[in-house]
Length: 96
Image 1 (cartoon, one colour):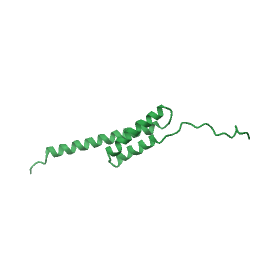
Image 2 (cartoon, rainbow, N blue to C red; image 1 turned 90 degrees about the vertical axis):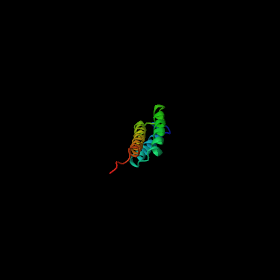
Image 3 (tube, rainbow, N blue to C red; image 1 turned 180 degrees about the horizontal axis):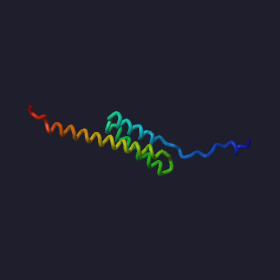
Image 4 (cartoon, rainbow, N blue to C red; image 1 turned 180 degrees about the vertical axis):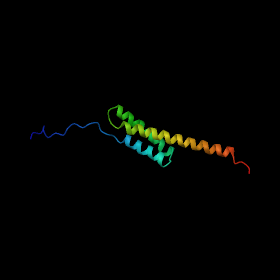
């Protein structure tokens, strides 16, 4: 066989790990109730992954978007819990 026939096929879009990391951090933030600890990095890394997809450097935009959504969801849950705790302490317990 000639050298040309044995050449590897051209590589498709490289699948970078930014989308995967965003998804993992987003899932951890919701499931483990880590809120801002992993929610904020999920949002940041997910947006970087989406930029990589637009630049043609990756092909996993769905994972990146899901990570961003889960990151925002965990932050919303965190804010709701904080508001409920504050309301509970401000309202106080009714006297018996």
